[in-house]
Image: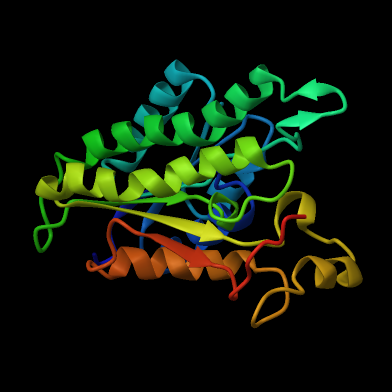
Length: 252
């Protein structure tokens, strides 16, 4: 899909990897709408991109539907969706304190997997009415993690959630293929975003010692570059692409 002139919604776009994707899509000629928490820097980021900001808590189904609808109305349509909202907790299945609290597990699944699917189903509905370009109507990019494949000790909820995102990519791509909508997920390793941004170099070196090359944290712009490549290459569909410098997580 040619990016110039297209409409893009970036969920989680106030910072990190999603912000980098928004900036690079804008540089290629897309119009941008940012969805993020009301407390985020979303308004400032959207202004810098000549876009619009739509505050949302993706844990709320109704808020998500309203914010996404507002964003699509502001853009005048939707061709590209990048979804990065998520998070986890550090809890073992069984610890000295007892079994993993079911409430914590459920919340991580809701925040990562269910919120992502809710966004996807609504984004696909909006894309389905587009005029096709070379038979293509839209591209949905979701964010998994290499923890989906090598979850570390204490990541059981996060692993389950991200594995769900990775696992549904092909099925959703098959569901939406007749409409000309592609679905691809990206599975990053450790990136310099959020709580990992600005950690000391010596600590980052320990965390990335098992990478093949480069032995460093990923940079948000590298996620953005992959998002752009996915949009531009119609043969990328139904896959979960690792963005990890050849790293495999050890148990801890």
